Image (cartoon, rainbow, N blue to C red; front, side, top):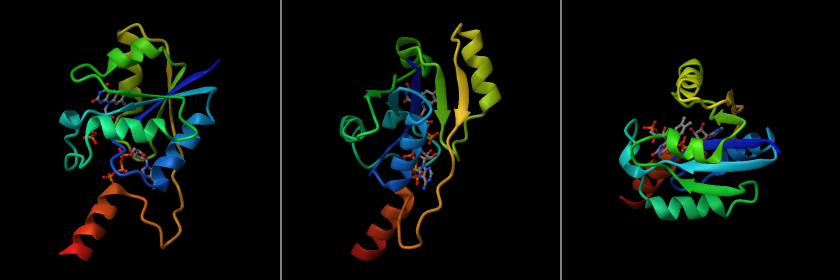
Amino acid sequence: MTAVVAQGTFDILHPGHVHYLSDAAAMGDRLHVIVARGENVTHKPKPILSDGQRRRMVAALDVVDEAHLGHPEDIFVPIERIDPDVIVLGYDQHHDEEHLQSALRSRGIDCRVDRASARDAPAEELSSTGHIVDRIVERRS
Ligand SMILES: Cc1cc2nc3c(=O)[nH]c(=O)nc-3n(C[C@H](O)[C@H](O)[C@H](O)COP(=O)(O)O)c2cc1C
Ligand SMILES: Nc1ncnc2c1ncn2[C@@H]1O[C@H](COP(=O)(O)OP(=O)(O)OP(=O)(O)O)[C@@H](O)[C@H]1O
């Protein structure tokens, strides 16, 4: 049984999220998703939806076996509990594979790090939360 971990913000679900999570699910038998706490999202605007709502929406996806809310301070706490065989990063996530791998090793966590593929979105599709929010603001203002 290969346990896989994927993680992200997942604010306002779109087909890009489904692609990432389907890709991650295909790399093992059981997919766990860690949903980032809003307070820890610092590289882009804070999520619109609450931590609990984002976690519940991710949990409702077919490819997801378990969705966990992230730890507020230490990202390795949920990893230690889940004990995955592989962590699958999103194709564009800023986390560095080598750096993450050595941090895992120094915590005594034996797990490899892989990356999901990018997705070719059809032109009419909005597959970025930032673009969906921009479109809403443009249409409603
Ligand atoms: C292996 C791994 C585990 C993570 N676990 C958590 C966690 O437990 N709690 C959390 O808030 N964020 C966690 N994150 C980080 C988020 O997914 C996200 O990268 C972070 O909240 C910052 O968002 P931003 O990078 O888009 O600013 C984890 C990231 C990685 C790579
Ligand atoms: N169109 C896409 N194709 C492939 N993977 C995607 C796509 N959109 C999102 N993902 C993956 O899903 C991960 C989790 O999504 P997250 O909600 O953190 O970011 P996002 O949807 O790209 O948001 P934003 O547009 O605000 O940056 C992303 O880091 C990314 O790797």
